[in-house]
Length: 408
Image (cartoon, rainbow, N blue to C red; front, side, top):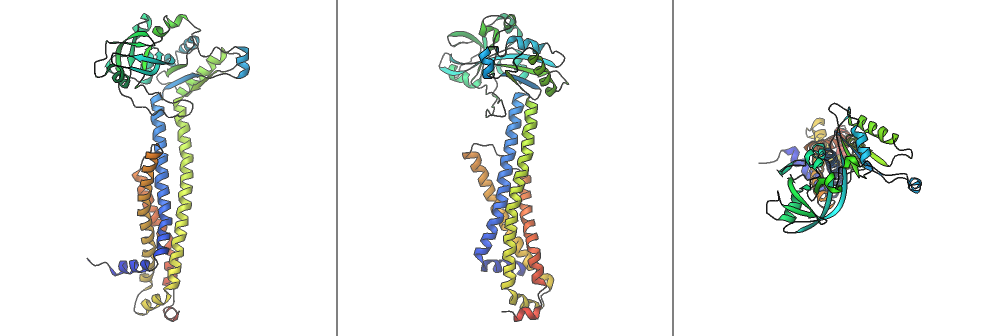
């Protein structure tokens, strides 16, 4: 099928000045590629942050031991987080529903078919409910295990395969640094992005072995107020604000420390809000970069079209003298500007998607390609062509036919 005369004329005119056209297309393409790739990185960062914070639990608060100042260490007055602190937090029953201490140690775990260096987590049974951990096989730890100082454990799915092979692990024995434990459950796969988010990151439980605190220390931890713990996990009571709970915990712990805080109170919901605020700042920066790049591309298109008007003055005069209207002349140059920007938009989308894949593959960053950003980038690129082509098109249409024909 033959191309319409206007389209054919547009392509023929652009092909005369291939280098200038290519440079203008490149300018728009870079702007569109910047929009697509940077927005994809931003959306990926937002999704990663939300997934990580969700893994911590939006209704939870985490208290983590922080090394005190040198002056405090010299006075030897900091005993770190203790079971007494966990009991003090548990007394805030009106705002705290569940409380679990956590001790974390690197260990060597040996099963019937292999051994694995991993992390041991000694927790209270409520830890599973606080984090929403579920057992794919067997069961989780229970309050009976806590009270009975039972040497039982729940292990991650990957650890199960490493030390028991394909055999059923439930009821089998393993040793943790030489001490025997009976496996009562295997955690469901829960792939967590463990890259750092703020002051804390979610754990991966795939290789973990989780035991009761009582079994790990060999006695009822409630009777030992000075037992050191690494973290205390708290879940807010229904209807309570986790941020307010964090403030209440801070006041309670600080009241028992004359030397100041040797802990951090981490509120995942507040971390999420911080991430969202950073995301909005990133959006502004991305928008500014894309706007400047597209503006440069638009200036390039306008420059090409103004040069074309100057070089094709005689052609314009000849077309007007044989009956072409001002509207037809303006439409011709406007179509050429849009064609340049549309070509740049297509090239930019391809380049942006390729850049997004490269960032994800080589930078190991999570990226999310949004169809809204792709469509918006395409529409904006065409809009740039329209805006950049209006003035050159009007200038071409206003040329006097007689003077234009005589122009050399």
